[in-house]
Amino acid sequence: MVLGIGYRFIARYSILGTNSEHNTIMNKRILFGLIIITIMALVAILAPFVATYDPLEMDLSPEARLQAPSAQHLFGTDNLGRDVFSRMVYGTRISLSVGFIAVFISLIVGVFLGGVSGYYGGKVDSGIMRLVEVMYCFPTFFLIMMVITFLGPNIVNVMVVIGFTSWAGLCRLVRAEFLSLRERDFVHSAKVQGVSDMRVIFRHILPNAMAPVYVSATLSVGGAILVESALSFLGLGVQIPTASWGNILTAGKNYIDFAWWLTLFPGMAILITVLSFNMIGEGLREVLDPKLKERKG
Amino acid sequence: MRRYILKRLLLIVPMLIGISLLLFVIMHLAPGDPASIKYGLNPEVSGSARANFSTMYGLDKPVLTQYLLWMKRFLSLDFGRSFIDNQPVSAKILSRLPATLLLQGVSLLVIFCIAIPLGIISAVKRGSVFDRVTTILVFIGYAMPTFWLALLLILFFGVKLQLFPVSGMSPWYAAYMGGFARLKDLGWHLVLPVAATAFGSLAALSRYSRSSMIEVLNENYILTAKAKGLSRGRVILVHALRNALLPIVTIVGLTLPVLISGSFIFETIFAWPGMGRLGYEAIMSYDYPVVMGVGVIATLLTLTGILLSDILYAAVDPRIRLGSKK
Image (tube, rainbow over all chains, first blue to last red; front, side, top):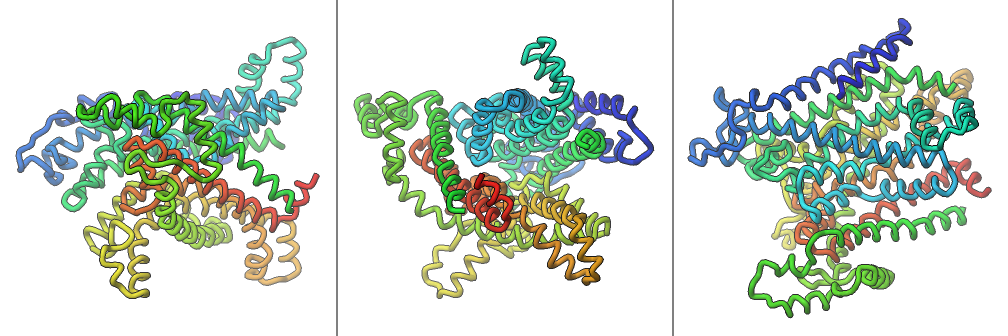
């Protein structure tokens, strides 16, 4: 999916590309991010082949538990004698899917509300903006914790809840774009031709407002992964025995006096993944910026 | 100015109603009523005892009535009593609030003292080694799972070096220590939680002050000041800095929800006896009145912070103040 978006940008913007360094799409950051994310995605898809052990297989004999990293167990074993490397490989699936699906949900909500708000203005707009303000002022993590606990901690709820609590930024962004675009000639001519409001919003204006949305959505994927790992860490996300990077860290905290590897490796995985998404997002911002300036000027 | 503040104060009311309604609806969407969650697995609690529990906390009434009753009590700052120990919720929160305010206040101070100079120096020396290094650090800061950072701090400074205490706010023997020793001990306990809490917002704020400073440095009046022959230091520290700091004031408002969200995680990790941990424990034990109380107080704290930063902004920037009079 990221690759798809990436290459669509390559196709679209390299035509515009002059010789200036910012206009060439093969921005170093994007490239770096894409490579890491592609590797992560492959690991997630091919998890059964990459993992060296069964991630759920326990070995409770004293010598098998909490083993330090070695040739047999690359990242060591946890308190139940499970191979940490294999658990992390399967955890990749959780993190990536939560990241993408949660952002997809928040995209739908944010773009829809932002578009409607910016297009119609007036009472609709001020109503939606109040809602956005509530979302901004509320410590969202508390809300997420609450909903997950009360509705049951499982991966689907985690995705849905993160999606439904993280659309406020996107909504504002889309609204701002719509406010400037709705006065443009092509919108007026579409309206004069009798095109329906929804069609004007989604077919005529939205495609022109997507550039900053792509940037913000890419950055949000990283954010969603961070929230999911924090939830799993607190025991509110993906439930054991299913492995996720966050819940390996829970064990890491409980055995922090003896087993540093339980803490170090999953955290590194989260950091690198989020860093890669942020790099793609920042890279896209750099690439798209000339176009944004041109439009405003 | 007074009208502006009043207008902003009035906006808090619909916000609080919205948020408390949201919390209420979520809790009542949850499957199972509190009585059966608390006693459901206990065969010794009879049906009538459960019904008593429900009547006692008004859980047998329709949801809307319950909300209105809650609202009525809330107006007199009464959040009801905890399901777990039957203590008044307001007393429970009040006893936990100072610890949270201390942690957040110190963190905010640390964030400002580090992030603003970092951003300003980066802006002035744009493109230098310093700027590039901070840019990389900021990038890592944005991607850092801060709860993991907290674990690393515990691992390194607590377990390996045994330098700082890793949990709690004061040891049991604190009551026997002298005033100064107690203060020092408290400071010692604060180091790791503050480091973990502050880190997440450092990146955003230093980036923000950097771009704010760069914007100001491109203004015409800076050119004028330079053309007048003022020294570089004077131009930067007097002319540019003052104007660059203005918009940073509003960032406090955006930092607060992040800090308070963080308090639920960090206070749990560091066993800090604050409101965040109370909220976490209340959620985990389905203690609805406490959850409502913590949610509303956390929101109120955030709103107050945002309001303060708005007022401060209006006070220092006449454009905002005069604009609002129209």
